[in-house]
Length: 306
Image 1 (tube, rainbow, N blue to C red):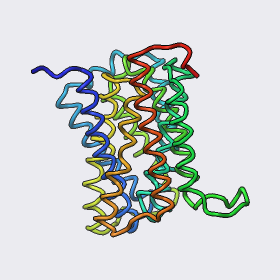
Image 2 (spheres, helix red, strand yellow):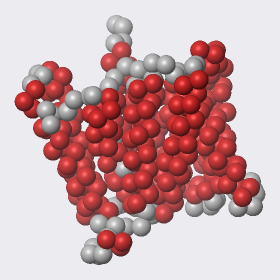
Image 3 (cartoon, rainbow, N blue to C red):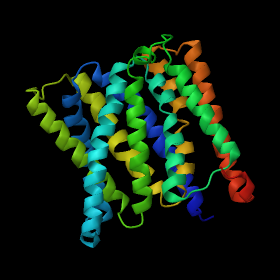
Image 4 (tube, rainbow, N blue to C red):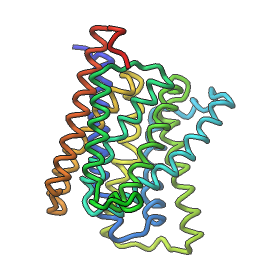
């Protein structure tokens, strides 16, 4: 039985989710022993190596010759956005003690992606999706709220980094979706790893740090780099060739469950009750978005549009 493109898209999205869930775990372990610049050089250096091997195997380098000047400018823009967004992501991992909290708060990313998809890509969403987005945002706030009334001290430390990363990730995802037919996923992955590695090398030199790290940290970075910069990204980009961006975003948000299990197994940590409640809110919101999207595709009723 031949696999349909839609099934391929969902399968690739699931692979991407499982891989990125492990990124939270292995990066957290490594960042306990190394600095962010050291981590970045090894993490994205290995990631670039894996994708170069993949590109060589798939004979994808010829795709560079077909790119227009506009595409190269888009790649440069994506690289800059990736550098800033990824820095904030790993800063959040380093700051927040439990990776599950980062994952749950990060569920706001699909809300940003779907909203931007509606504005930029003209992807429609309905009333159920709208309320799902609000529930996701409410859940993220419940998780992040520290109890203080002052605006500057309202959220837990590190939540702001997840917010910055999610917004930049949404912008990046929308740009990629609009150009996925013109720029091959392998090129997008190479571009991402190259910019992040270059930034990490510059940061390492500026901060006058060395590449000397422990064997334990090296091992975790090695494994994580195969899952993160390579498998997560390439599978995610390939999925966009077969399914809508909003569907991929919804599937990607199930990563919180995998991160929760991994955090408990590796660190013996379980989120507080209030964080779990907020996490459940975000998951219910994402399910509402999923069902709303399916309803919109099956029954297109203009009166339901927001």
